Every structure is written in C-alpha cells, then in structure tokens.
Image (cartoon, rainbow, N blue to C red):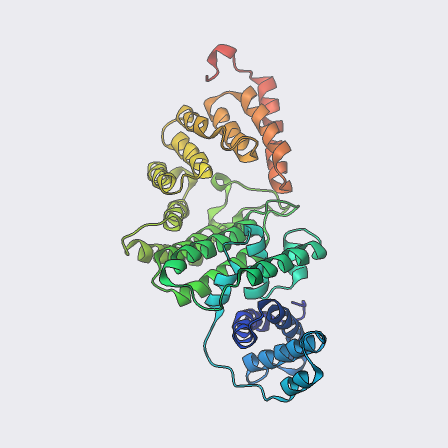
Length: 419
C-alpha cells in the first residue's frame, strides 16, 4: 500500500480484500482475473480514500471498483466475447453482494496442495493479505517480475486444478487446514528471522502472519491447533524488541533484556495456550507454544525450566519427526544434563541436516560449553560461511573471533577434548 495510507485504512483494506475476492470468484468463476481486479481496486482505494474519506460502504465500493476492472478486462477479450455481450454486462446492474464472508475459502484456495510452499506464501500474501506484488517481492528480496511470475504460475495451477470455489468437505478441511497453518507459520518465521538479507526482522511479514492467524481463529474459534499457532506467534513475537541491539546486531535469547519483552503479548499467548491445552488433544503448534511459554515465563535465563523444555521437545519430535526439532532437543539436553548429552543427540541428525548452518552453529555452541574451543571455533566458521542472513553471519563470525582469541590464550590439551 502507498505510504500515505494510515494504519486504520490499510487494516480495513487488508480485511476486505479476500471478502471482495470471494464475491467476484463466486460471481464470475475466474480466480485469476478476479484477483487482479481486486488488487487494482485496492490500489484505487489507497489513492482515493485518504483524499476523499472512507466511503460509507467500503466493501461495496471495493466490489464495484473491482467489478468494473473485471469488466474492462473482459472487454479486451474480443476473441471470447462479442461486443453485444460486453454491452449487456456493462449495462446490467451490479447485484447486491451478500454478507457472506468467503475469506476462509479464499485462504484454502491459496494454500492449494498443488502449490509449492513458496508459491502458496506469495499467493496468500497477495490474495488474502492484500499486499501488492511489489511489496511481496520486496519482503522476499526478489525482483518484482520474478514475484509476479511466481504468483501468476500459482493462479494458473489453481485454475488448472478445476478446484470448485467452496469450503472443503470435513475430510478435506482437516488436511487443507494443516497446509494453511503451515503456510502462515512459514510467513511468520520469515518475518521473525529472515533467511536472507541485511535485516534480522521483516516486521511486515510477521505482523501479517499474526493478523491472518487471528482471522482464521475468529472463523474456527474451537480448533486447538489454530489457537496453538496464534499463541506460538504471540509468545515468540513478544521477544522481538530485545532480539537486536541499537546497531541491528543479533542478541541471543540468554543475553536478551527481558524487561523489553512485550508482557501483553505474553499474557495473551499464555491464555490462548491454556485454552488450547484444555481441549485434550495436543498438536505440534501447541507444543511449540508451550516451549515458548516456558522461556517467556522465566524471569532470567538461569531460571529456565530446561527439563520441562526437553520433555516437550521429546513429544514434539515424536509427533513430527522433524530433524530441526531434534536439533533444538540437543540444546535442551545440553542445558538440562550436560553438553556431552546434547552432542550425542546431534549425532542422530548429522546426515539429515548435512550442510545446514544451524547444525554447525549448535554443534559449535555445545562444543564451547564442553570446553573444546578449537573445534567450536571451526564449526562457528563453517556456520558463518553457510548462512545467508547477514545478522546471523555477523554474530557467528563474532563468536569465532572471540574463540580464536580464547584458543590462543588458553588452549585445551588434546587429551581433554570431548570425543
């Protein structure tokens, strides 16, 4: 959205975008054309509303504008439509839009199983989040043309699938909701800890993921994993003010100034988590939220209940089989028992995470705790060379430089190094 649009108008546009898209797709059956028309109507609103004021019926204004854009698009398709049919369409009065909110259907469509996660993320941010192609491209540090192609291919895949515009059946919804939550989780993670670039955070992405997850929660208020994901996002995002220094340098969790954490978000996240846990069945997002809550409720890093975190990671690993969870369990084992216990856990993921910078970063940390400065230094250097995040690279390089000085000053005899 243009920078001159104030937050309240921008929030309204983002909320209304999928609703208007849903009406157009129901009415005309063309997701691709309807989505393009909605984007144009959002841009028009961003220009006119700050100047002329928000209309009395903003949803109707957007719908009418988008529908006119859609008609203009159809006018150019002379090979498909005759001039007479276009004239009839132009002259036909716009039917009154129902109050039905199709946002959740649109979200399910954007998270189509035929799409790659990258395509689903891009399409979700554009069609449901209301972001322009340029905004999404900027967030992911790619060219606008590249992002436009990615979104176009995603829309063509949905069109080719012949997927009807309706809510999935109960059986379909279970699987599709899992995809939706995964896409929202990926958007949040990219915003909270950017995988590439100069900045650690891309606040617009993490904020959008939270907004969309709140929206899903309003529509599915009793789903435990939806509640769990929202709680997880809030509990993690609460730490964001303390994650970087004034110069933008990464500050790790044990070193953060916890007085900077957002206690309001923590309280909301814990309340949501308690509600989700009370429902009985526990899923992966609830477990992740529970781990985040243990960290957030510790007044100091030394007060962290590492045995509880280790147990929770064990349950999460059993549910997901995710090697990154095992990586985190290794850290918890080291903190709850000993660095050697953590290093033993790492051996189980050497092959599955081979080449991933986080494996080397964690091994470096645990080797340092175990007293093997030389080996830790080597792994910090490898991790720094492999990461594409500049803040993380600077942090890892700093750790390596610190250990180089330490190794020179106080070398560890070979017979005392851990095996």
